[in-house]
Amino acid sequence: MITRRRLAGMALIVALAVSVVYAFFYDRTKEYLSEEFLMDTLVSIKTYGNDLDDLKKATEQAFTEMRRIEDLTDRFAEPGTPAYAASDVCRINEQAGKKAVTVSSDVFAMLELSQKYYTLTKGAFDVTIGPVVDVWGFGKPDQKVPGADMLKGALALVNNNDMVLDKQNMTVFLKNDGMCLDLGGIAKGYATQKAAEILEETGIQGALINAGGNIRVLGVKDEKTPWKIGIQDPRDSSRLIGTLDLKEESCVTSGDYNRYFMSEQVRYHHIISPFTGYPAAENMSVTVITQDAAVADILSTALFILSPQEALTLAEELPDTEAFIVTAEKQILFTNGLKNVEVRAGEGYRYDKS
Amino acid sequence: MTRADKTLIICVLLVGIAMYFVLPLFNDTDSHKTQAIIKQEGQIVKIITLVENESSSFKMQGKNGPFIVEVDSGRIRISESACPDKFCVKRGWISSPGESIICVPNEVVIYFDAQSPVDAITR
Image (cartoon, rainbow over the protein chains, first blue to last red):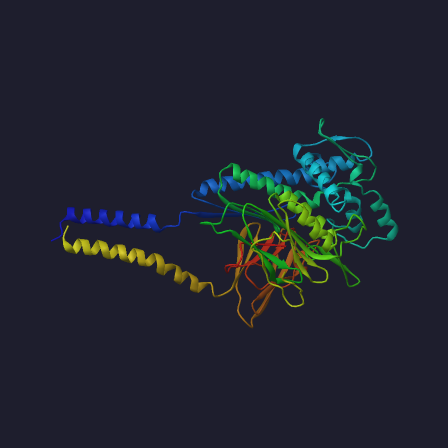
């Protein structure tokens, strides 16, 4: 006979036993994924931790930070709107040739970094490229191949040395009328890096931020598994041309296949060389792996503009910087220090194992 | 506690442990069917099961304007869109896990449900 007391006791034991087993086997690491359209792309933040509420809160803070950077660097705000007044880049461009403009510490930091890499890349990375981007129409509804005279005029305004940074007063001055900053090669990376720092400060152990292919990871995915990142095949979007393992690092790719327009059967993409004023043509894609996402963004653009050999040499020289390059001749090259890379050369690609 | 009680407890425990390993197997069988997911402004608005040799197309309304989604033998694309830059149309067909079509002006994302072999793709 089972008495009522015994039944109650038994139920209690079973409940206890089940919860112990559940607690033992249950995967305590929770994943939280959030996506938002900002900085002209889809940004997704994936975080891992024990408490879903903490993950949610941290992710929201990271997005707020990215939106803040977006507002400061938005180049296409309408004059007279609050967005225009909030954009440091709009205000700097408006005062080109006139006067110095006081800016936020973030925009100042981005421009300092830009200047440093302008020198390091011997002019391949130049944030004063704005006038040339404008004559091509990138970032605007209509894109067209500019006339030679128009292009020449715009190119004459491009010179990073005519951007004056005053650290004491936190001001920026573009010396010549018509000059125009375009932070398209750094803002997304910088925002990604800031978001990663926010997540780190809030104690998040594992995270992956993906801002339209600009990737920054924190920690490990789970139990020491590194993050696995695929590099898109530049001529077949359904394929990966390689995979990488990332740990506390960023990787950013610049390619000729994402943003482009066609004119008389010729493809014109959006990464314009400050040397020629035309889309850079020596590489199909360049992926840079380094700790800081802003630096990875800058370098992927700069190395894309350089010749494959120059790009590879520069990446080898820079500390803690690796690069994976697909040249216009479909040759795959990468730096010696790039570990845990798996190359999947598809049809037509050349890859010489060394 | 009688012998029967103990047996019962152990049985419940064993079943619990077994379920932990068995249940995920059932979930996996579902993912063999490829499903494309369409998200608009952060919300899933449509789930399409992609079947070989079956095609269809339909019109949807985005934040910026209308667009047409085309499905054909396990692949999917945006064939027309009223957005200014048309990067989504130029993206062409997608057919494997990890791939996605993104239209920023329309705030539309199309991707596959199945597990991608990588955590993210740099492009």
